[in-house]
Length: 124
Image (tube, rainbow, N blue to C red; front, side, top):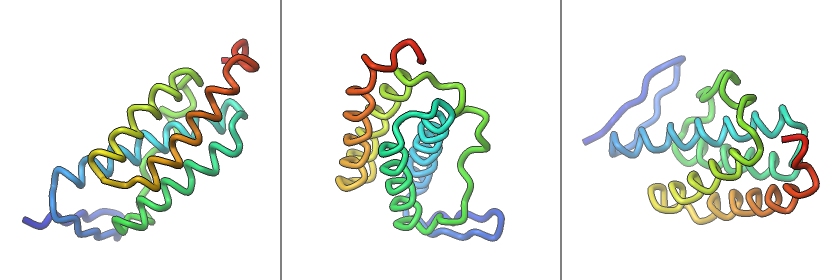
């Protein structure tokens, strides 16, 4: 079975409709995490890792011109919540997308934020 995504002039072919939903969910969560970090002004290196991860997944599934978040969710997530969110997303990326490179980028971000936590805890 072949699922076709149509919207805003974008067409992406993904063989499994379940995979399409997984990819969109993962990209939405990663974008929310990135927006939250940008709002809090922490984790510049982590933000870059998430951008690379998002870009890589979008490229892999030909979704480069698709918008996944309007910013209304991401700026409300506390940093400790971002860490938990990224732990979940990392497992999804590894297990559902079989994408070890992106999972590694997410792990680097998690480690970075975990190391920042004692320093910035009052800001979160």
